[in-house]
Image (tube, rainbow, N blue to C red; front, side, top):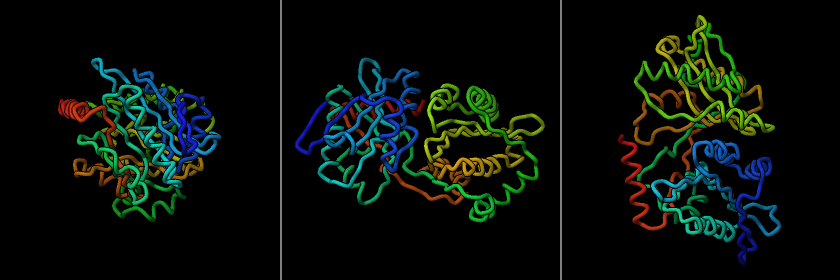
Length: 339
């Protein structure tokens, strides 16, 4: 625990599951990747969670929250802060002080490099606080995302692109049977169709342990993960994995077979998903990344056609032990991506 003249305190790993998630909800940009459960999921993959809050002296008003996951690779400590840090920007001095405390953690834990991807929007206010951090030279994810507000089905259909509306209607005519799968089924159903898609389309993308994450999330009051799966003649033709955290949903993975493509199942899937989320009083669906370099033009076309709000986040930045450590870290990332 450290203290400074701004009457702020930095606490590490001081909150339990419920307390952490309640603290996270104080920030408008709260997200599933900063949830307690996501840290526990990463723990199962060999990462160690480090949960940090910076608050006023009474520990009620938070200025910063950040869940870091750390690992030793080839004897070197590296760390990743997915979805964070998140900051309260009301008091400039307190915010800058909190970010300095966050930066000091790199030295305290001897991190060679800490890669962050805050969910804070890239606007004039937020940029002033993050401008001093080194932008990553080799990024893992895009800054662009698409946010879809949930709404009644007729309203949703009326505001999307004409071609997407046509494909949804074609999907409905094909009488696909849509089902919600939870807990162990959420994982087994998605893995099955994902394996088929990998074989048909020669893909090899890593995915999380959906069943374990479902178990972790479903142990809390208002969070869960589901697989929405579409069946035609008892065959799963399309599915997506979506997590829900408080009033937000997050789109993690999707898979469709060749037959599903012929049935326009992916378009119908998003229509069914929005209907389902709306019935649960979920406010928005974070549709995930859009490319910044047109490298996934087909995916971008699909996502943008639902006419959500495009958000550009601050993006990835590094806090490194030295310039050399940062250089080596980014070179290692580049090598891994090219394999």
